[in-house]
Amino acid sequence: MEHLPKRISLVTETSASLKEWIATGVLRDILPGELQLKKRLGIGRDTLRLALKALAQEGWVTPAFKGRQRRVQAIHLPPAEDVKAAKLPVTFLSPNPVESRATLLEMEDTQMRLAEQGHNLRYLAPAVFHLKHPEHRLKQLVLANPSVAWILYLATEPMQRWFEEQGLPTFIYGSPFPEVTLPYVVSHWGAAAFHAGIQLVRRRHRIIGILEYHTRFPGVLREEQGLERALATAGNKGRLVRFKDDRTPGSIARSLELAFGLQERPTALVLTYASQLLTCYSWLVSQGIRVPADISLVSLTNDSWFGDLYPPVCYYRPDTKLMSRSIADRVLELVETRQVVKKSRRISLEYVSGATIGPAPA
Image 1 (cartoon, rainbow, N blue to C red):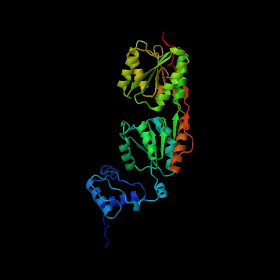
Image 2: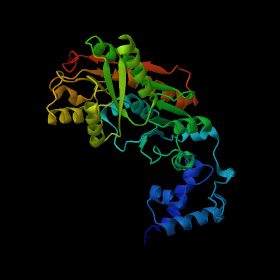
Image 3: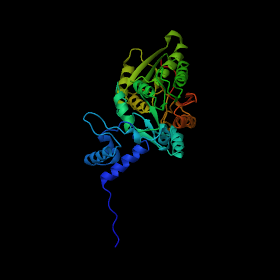
Image 4: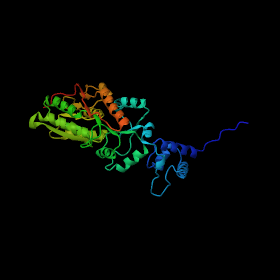
């Protein structure tokens, strides 16, 4: 008579999964909180607690104490070389829950080359980018998401400094803040802004507005510096006017209302991210303002839909292949050696002429 195989309880399966994570280095040092573990394992609270109790009895983790998180017992931690063999993912931290097409294209080489080595590229959008003091939340995030390396995108200065201070293998997709020495690859925004400013100054624009995100990232500072250098070629008549937005259409519209309400208004606007363009076009049309007869526009970024707009937009286009390859080279070096020997790089953008820059109106 054949016997049916005994069913393994969910508690036993959970214990086995936790042991495997510990043995391969996925879980190290302090265990994540119960809520995070429940989500990652897809189980209930009672099942998790019984599994953790069993692991504590077997000496895999420390017993539970009020106000203190459990820790992995050092005897079960694998050597560092075995952790590398565990093929942990590379985690991409971004404030955006859905990444733009341009970002995904520039990360394509990195994703493919990591996959060849058995690593995944994991995208996370944690609610830490708005915090002035994100240190505690970042520590929880790192413990809950073991990674062989980290990629920071649009990270604030406190975030960049925390990752550097912790000595975690980290790459910045973008510009570092002053005195942050983490490796990076970024488009050369300062050079593009200088070129845009020269195009406008040659057409007698003397008051140029820049529409930018309210958080002053290093890339924005370099764009401002590039425009100011261009305006300096016009002598003391040149002036840069900054307008802020929070990446919502309403805030962009309010900035445009402010710009056109000034006694000496800008005769040209420089846009710093692609989605500003649609709001600008629609608002200008609603006010009967013509491009470029009444206002000139130039965008320092681009998107695939720019080709569908009329009049054709003046904008700057990145070398996506070079950017993608440069990022991949440095991220793979970071994964393999925990450091980057290759120099950080600023990559020039290509100017695409259109019909949105004209002479400054009288």
